[in-house]
Image 1: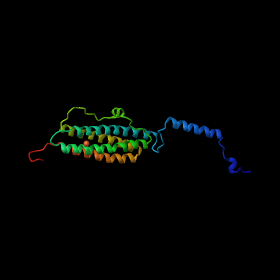
Image 2 (image 1 turned 90 degrees about the vertical axis):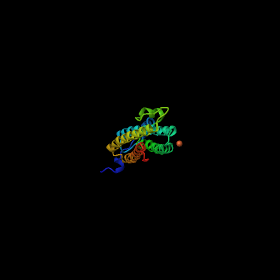
Image 3 (image 1 turned 180 degrees about the horizontal axis):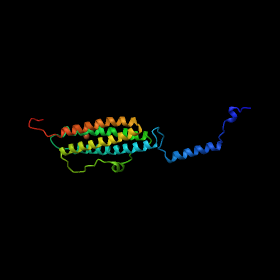
Image 4 (image 1 turned 60 degrees about the vertical axis):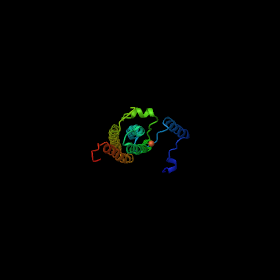
Amino acid sequence: MAKSASTTKKVVPAKKVTETKIEQAKKLQKAPLLFPTDLGEKASKDISAAMNSVLADVFALYLKTKNFHWHLSGPHFRDYHLMFDEQGDQLFAMTDPIAERVRKLGGTTLRSISHISKLQSISDNNADFVEPADMLTELCQDNIKLTARMRSAHDVCGQYNDTATASLIENWIDESERRSWFLFESSRKSDSSGH
Ligand SMILES: [Fe+2]
């Protein structure tokens, strides 16, 4: 006589179900900030590392841009002061989306100024006075450096098919190149015709 479906179904003892739930709860307790992503654990780790490095540089460059905005002096004060402010706003606007992308991938992100200083590749400038022309040159080079770091992060996203992070980076690269362009053009020496 054939067995009915109800008789062939494996019954999991209540004790075993409870143990599994306890194991799951323990795992969650150990890693409360982890959550699953279809990209996988390695992708989460590698993309988070790349994006946290970018984030550290964005914070470093944001503060340097504001530093120059605050400590600028010279005949082009108004132009440069306003341009640095605009560029600072643009950099600051990147910070929250970068940090939240990392969290969406199951990673953890920056926690403090000391954490930023460990990861930043853009150097601080604590000089008492910086010539306006040197400010333009330094910020231009820093933005080029940031662009290169974002391109590397974009490559990492490509390896794992993380299109969401990659598409955000694409816009940020364009913004960064625009900042470099403005800084470079503003640093050109004028001739007698005023050009
Ligand atoms: Fe201001």
